[in-house]
Image (cartoon, rainbow, N blue to C red):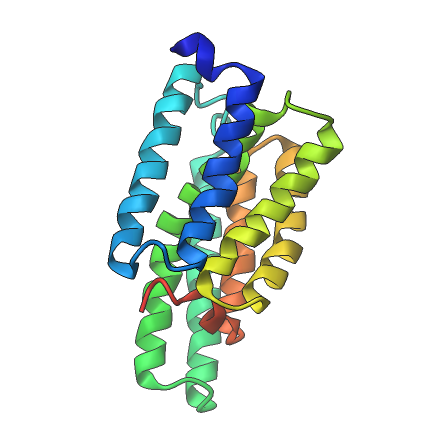
Length: 208
């Protein structure tokens, strides 16, 4: 079995299923809303099993060597900046009290849960698994395209366009520094910008 999953043809089928067919099932409502999280859980378990077979270390994630003090400073600045922006929007009557509560929840859950999972799926796993399938430029372009296309599950094309632009930046950062850590930071910052500017409404269909 291990030999089969390492074959090129299997990887192409796997890539097509994980990054194209599964989101299409959601886009065309073949998967009921209440079952979508089970689908995402299946995907997550599957890629975790494959990653475990790769036997990666923390060094592969480029997590070692990062000072805790630097992480704490970034976290503190992130919290303060996010709260200030949200309070300004609230006192300008741009967002309601209910919206303020919702965005506060998003600002906590999104960077700590959603972003790390997405970056494992779209960057760490993707490039470690499929880099040898074709030319580097093709793999990079496919990554950005599939990352954007996945966001069609939210319904509209605005989320796809925004994700395509964001995908270019995140993928560039990931490949430049070869770091899962910096990809997460970049993804988190871009996501927060989207949410606090009001564009988050195009990315919350799966939350409501």
